[in-house]
Length: 272
Length: 299
Image (cartoon, rainbow over all chains, first blue to last red; front, side, top):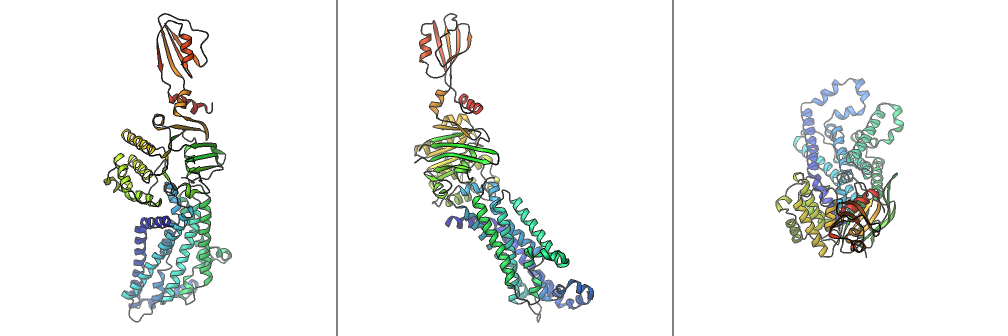
């Protein structure tokens, strides 16, 4: 256990610059979004924007349009904007494929030549992915809170704490889900680029599936296969409660991924 | 309890047989050289000992503990130098040594590390540098320090002098003498024959995954034929009745060149009646024997 804690501390130290930089950028993005939303709100821009969109377009785009026509909606954008989701998932995949990287460079030879059980490598990686993902979301939430304090115009309605928490929890589980998938692939791979690339491609493909299914009915039949289907921020912003099913599915995928990683890594040859 | 005991070890990669029914024991306190050409199965065997690879069949034991089923205990007292030091280049040398020492759950023995640094001429200033600034030789020295620093009962070294300059090789040999004197066992792979001849007590030679020779250095020298040149006062025709193990290679004016395997006594007895002026004996070369096994396999 002490060895695993030591390895965790070492791994955390190695990724601290990446994690802090990404976290600060994501937090800064929240500040920028709130600043912009505040400016639009102050200048009465949301009302003007609403009149610019023709009714047919509003109907075509659905409730998401209404979300972007409000201060609260733009503030929440920081939790489902493509770049934010991409950054979090990419970071999660990178961290989850740490064992593959350690096998690739030969570092695994050195650490496993010590009296350290293989399962601690996976436990360390799960802890690393979870802690860093939580840290990212914590910084984003801190950014939102600071941004609202600094830039929210007086009298404007803030998004509720429950809404921000729900978005963060759901996004966090989506991130962890991809961490689990990447970990399972990485536990059986010799190259981080292969494991990360495969997990990244899978994430992109399932994102497209979910996106296409929202516009094209036939794809809806298989859209349940996409983890992105279980993160629906528009539902949350329009006042619906965070569905337990979403949390269970995303958490379940993450757990299955972690379990597969334990099994695969225990059985494999560690050879670079 | 043998420091290393390997029984019928086999490792297959698909159709490729990397290690084939290998059995050998290391003796406590010896330096056992593990020889073979590239791809002979040396590193694969070492990796199985460390449970990095799982054998297709057979068993390997370290200090009585099965490397696969009781791997943690087996690896409790090992110092390992891999063929390539795979370390993240953003770490300093000291961070690497500290991390690897702590993973052994041992107190960092500063005194021991200082001795190793002095022996390998590796100053503190180098330990403060990041690995990306290290040369190949420096990485090798760092690898040796990390392997030796916990003073383990068994050292497993994969091509230890690869990348070391001749002076550092000398320092390394002194280090080996030192650990041997303190009763440690060393299992080292190498294909530098002069090095093996100099430092090893025994050698195990593998060829295409099979053990083709396991022998002490003295016995090995006996296996080798000595070159004997006999000079005469006058021309002497080749005698028909040369003793077994003696073979004429060349005859010249008033001289014979012979290859003699085994004791010299019978040959000396045979030529005692001839007008011998002088005898020149060239010591057996270990290299010749090993190269023969490299080429031909099991005799």
